[in-house]
Structure formats: structure tokens, C-alpha cells
Image (cartoon, rainbow, N blue to C red; front, top):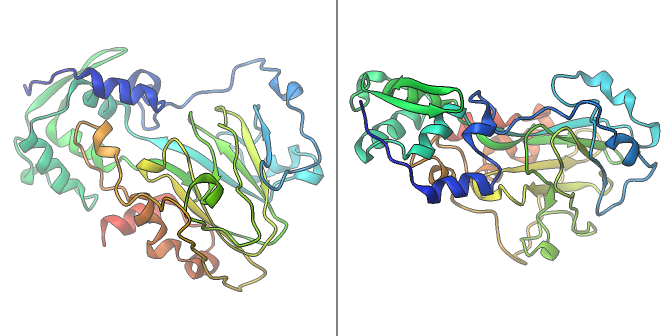
Amino acid sequence: MIPTDLPTTRRRLLRSIGVGAAGAGLGTTAGAAEPVAGDNSAAQNSQSNAIDPIFGLASAGPNPCSGDADASCFESFPEPVRPDHEVELHIEIPGLLLALAEQGGFSDTTTATINMEAADGDVVARNLHRPDATVEIQTPDGAVTRTVAEIATLVTETIGFHYDPAGLHVSPGDVVLFSAETPDHAVAAYHERHGRQNRVPDSVGPITSPQIPVGGSWLYRFGAEGVYDFYCPPHQVFGMVMRVVVSDGDSVPSLSVENTGRPPAEETFLPEILAGFDPNVPSSHEALTAAPLDPEAIVEDGPVSWETVVEHHRNS
């Protein structure tokens, strides 16, 4: 049995960013929740017929496109604000891995070999330090036991905080629906008025959503052609970014970057909240400079999933 401890600082950090093993349900999606039954917030947040060019149009829910709904859910929105595309906001960290992180994780040696094996997303058990050694993990439903090899597999299944798709091509005038599937997400443009690099077309203002409640939504209509880079304010440090390319047909606009403030983070703090476990998920900078999110690739290939970005990063 591998001993663990319980550092309160890591637990506080997990709680402060809306992630915890108890809230994770010990599944594959951290912090997932269902809209409250009988919630009348839709009446209190009824859709207007206008989408603000800065603040978009937010609704606390219920979002008809939440969960596994298909594209027919768009018909539930009034025609003036009916979406053409959907982007989901996720946290995907196995709950057992979060629970183990709250207990303190493994020794440095064991963690290092897990990280080496997880780096390319493919775990070979014999390369791990004591792969058959076990650890008892305390969960809200009681203690469970897992081997080092099983924990290594959970690390490879971690793709972290993300928008999906992470790359999207839309036409001028298209409306995009952002659906919050997990807590504490928002959408903000990299813009000088947010203290960031300017990474949107010159004529575009500091686009931002409120924090979107789980089961709620945010709509934005894209007008000016160009490349738009977005980040989630609470989770940008964990690599939660995306790119929208706005153009007619197959034309590919150029990315415009002005050094007016903080650039996308070059490192990810995901290992900091996972007791040193590193699933090798790209940082914000690495994601936005990855080949799958090149504007030409987005236009040519269509929606680019976050999993595609992670896979490319792990194999490059």
C-alpha cells in the first residue's frame, strides 16, 4: 500500500476553482451537474431579440441544448437569436484522480514514472515504478483501492478544462451558443481592455460573457471577418482557450496579434492541482499555436475537437 497525506492547501485550490472530488461524482467529468428540476429561471431570463456586440446574450437556463441534445435543439430559440453552432464548456478530470490529489498523491518517484508514461497518452505498465502497488482512495461513497497502473490510465484520460470544439469556422452573422456543462466557466476575448494581448480583429471590442451557470447558456453573434481567440477567465491558467475563424466560404483570414497586455500562458498549472500528476495537456499558448488550431486548418477541416488538440500536443 502506498501512503498518502492530506495537504489542505491543494484542497483549498481545488475548491476555489470549482473542482472537487465530491462534486465530480467520481466519474470522468469533474463538477458536472444537472439543471435544477422546476427551475423557472428561463422565465426570469427570457430571450430577447438582440445580442449585444460586447456582452452577447446570457440565460441562466434551462438550456435546451444542454447535455446530449442534437442540433434540432436550436429550433427552441427565437429566430432572431437562433444559434448556428454550439460550443460546450467542460472540465474532464476523473473524480478518482481528484480524490487522490486531495490526499496528496504518490511519491515523487512513482509520480515521475506515471508522467513519463502518460506524456504520449499510452501507458506501458512495466515501465512504471511499482505498477501493481495499491493505494486506498477516500471518496464520498467510501474507500476504493486502485493500482499505480490504473491511476496512470486515469492520468491519460484527463483532458482538463476546455471548450469543445476548440476550433470553429463560422460565417459572418452566425450565432454561436456556448453551453456550460460544468461549473465556473466564462468566455472572454483576448483584448487589450481585458489587460490581454489583442487577438481579435481590429474593429472588435472586448467581448465577454458573465460566468455561465451549469445548464445555462451564452449567445454571441460574430460579425467582422477575422480570427478571434478566447479564454475562460477562471481556467486560462489550465489551458482553456479556443479559436473562432469568421470568414465567407473557404477564405482564410490572418491572425492579428498586438502586444497590448498579457499573452496566453505558456505553462499550465494543471499538475499543481493534481498533486504533481501531469496529463500533458497543452497550455493556452501551446494550444493556440498548435497545428490543428491554425486558421487554415480550422477552415479546411471544420470544427476541431479539444481531444484533437491534446492528441497532437502529446505526440509532437
